[in-house]
Image 1 (cartoon, rainbow, N blue to C red):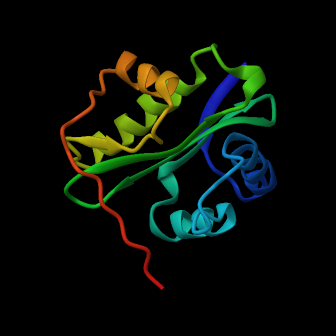
Image 2: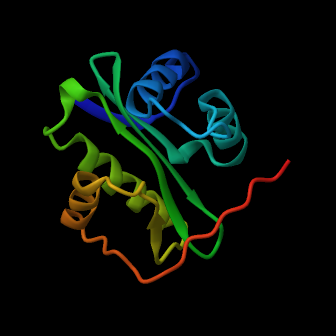
Image 3: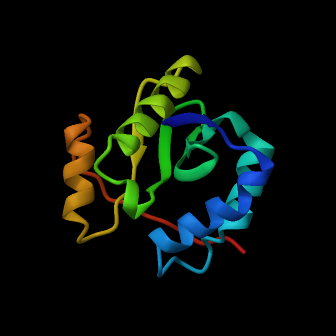
Length: 138
């Protein structure tokens, strides 16, 4: 049975492997171990894993800046997709963000990921008319 729980330090290798399998061509600034360390320093209760009898089969990393919430690093092992794990992870992240006073959640999807867009639309997310801008620091 799959349970959702807060990330634990011994999950690190499995989470890094899952993220590497999910995003085979990550941006150079998206280093899994660094993302984990930053989240643990900031808000460790917003890094969640889906655990199937001791095996990490999913993750979500949520954030809240006091104004907007964010969903990042939602990943489900390919062999476990279609079982509602991703949906459960998003709902748990939303509940934790809401408990912090968050009223709106944003997320980013890479262009050309129609199935990912459809997944989030099934959860009530909508494409918004915004221009996304970014800048690498350092």
